[in-house]
Image 1 (cartoon, rainbow over the protein chains, first blue to last red):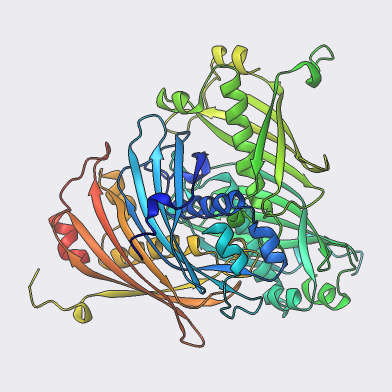
Image 2 (cartoon, each protein chain N blue to C red):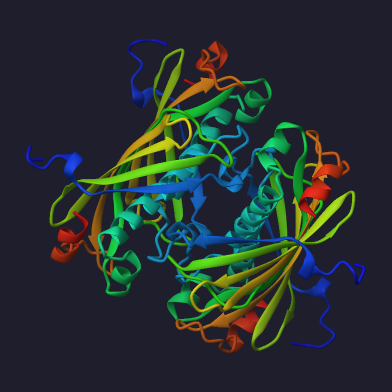
Length: 140
Length: 140
Length: 140
Length: 140
């Protein structure tokens, strides 16, 4: 990633999420698997903010699949907690987009988790295709 | 389908299910919403047992949607419990299939829940279509 | 239910929900099992609006379990749809609370689903206990 | 734990999993978030195979939390696919256990995903505690 292209200057998106009862496990914690849909919601909102829309893209035959994910869970979240998710694009080529995520407890500002994902674009048959130029300029 | 056809003589299917950790809530109970996928698995297995296959049906353009569901929750299930689900068809017309379900705790034979669903068949556009004759004789 | 105690005068709560990608199935529809957590969110918000809080109640040893649920699915919802859920209490005794739900597509005002649930209050060991007088007056 | 202990000689566990309809998304693929509960099921079975039991451990006040997870998604899985999950412990200290996972399509033997997790042991209050010696010898 070129130095001139720092994460700080990249567009990012803040999303408020309230933890649902169904998402919490017998420990009383937000189950670790439910962080992934949160990150997906972050990507959806970041794209919407750029003027595009995943749903429209799917209707046009562009599907995004997650190729890699890595999450660090630092502190648990609990039922009814208000969280803030920060999503940003850290790298984009014509075949992949990397995002980074920070999930905070809204009141205490505690950092609960950080994550990184790599997504690729595929067609209806699941074949990898180039990411729309258009989307690139909009979302990146 | 013969009129005298009583539920008792109807084909039914028994499915073993082990409760997953992610399905349990802060009370330590299997969350009530997760019974619905269990019932869906029961329908899948009942259909498979009849020689048909939901996945093939979807590829042929026949989709099944749940129109109605009613569940009575009698006793809770817990993480790692082994359950037995009994699924049977109680009524079938050319536009709908009704199923009944009984969910048991495998060891204790306690009845945990009973349920009824009505499903309808739709095409790719979501329009209600007649249920395959073939499927009728196979599944009913 | 006495005539003087009509649903219309009862407190109700409106909750905005956006359908998540992870909640949609291969038909592209919000999977029917995911309506149940929505209804649970409706109960959470209705209670909050009355000044109480499920999380605090759980910490005090009052747990609410779903004893019965019935849902009519009328129209499908899709990924990224904005929905409005109306939740109201229809009946309350010292051992159970009945709620009714209406789920609308926000833009089109189409009614997507209606539902009814009965919840009971249990203690930490799962034994049914009387619902707090206090909660009664607040939530009902 | 002997230093020469190579991953290959370590106990591992094979678990058969059939993909559920509710776990598949509008692309028709097993949603990436649902791989995490599969890995959790792998850990549960590996522990059971060693003679211990997560549920008993929780009753004794030992809880396992996921601290880190990394997944590589290589090929999609679809509704009704029969998968095989291989779970093994790759490293264990007195405060953490690392697992590695390989998820295969049962018929084709295609490798669908690989993953690694780090879990830690906490008490009822969420404080990190030493992993039972006993569990170590049994599970590792």
